[in-house]
Image (tube, rainbow, N blue to C red; front, side, top):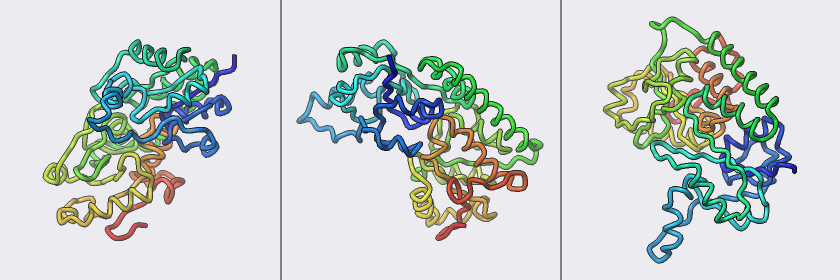
Length: 312
């Protein structure tokens, strides 16, 4: 039987497409927008409705861990029943909140009657994401494609890391800001990516949680480079939000600002999505940190240098 795949995560959708299985996708999340051709598919999720005490049933469902682990948004179960998916790709861990796979399967049986196979993606490291891509190929019936894609991504990652490598004493301190008000210093795969790109991450540990900071914390770190990557925002919106932050009086005291080493990236399109384009994200960081070694292939569409009130 031909696979009928539903993806509830943008990164998972990109994995399916990179495996050559776009034609087997029957639905996506409302956030899935790459590759462009998948936008023709029906969206089976929407932003969560406002939960009130007058709707206790909805409130209970929205709060139930099993349901929230399937998606961070409301799911159109009627649509999914009609599509009769054979596979659903989702995420079964978010931060410290973990849900048993068997509990999720119970939800699928309850809602869909004929439960599809559940493929849960939960890695928080770059090598782990690549291995999940390999495993997803096997679970979707194309193991050779999964192996080839994972091997190709690993080889490219190693090439970028080798070219970007520099002595420890010359590695700039890099603060990747996943949120701006207040500051959230990106963890998960980001510290690892900063190291591979030739930098010293402001937050250490290859799979560290993202860390909240205030102005005092950021000023104490005083990074050499700031990369603004507000989670979920494409480049134009990220620039606008960074401009708002740059209006604060403390901004001009940061070393990165004084040395014109502030950059804004397309986080939604790259850094926030655990999928094949994380390797593109690594190359973006390498272009920023080592402009003498990398041709700026992504400049202008994946990243820009930032200055308050304008950018170039």
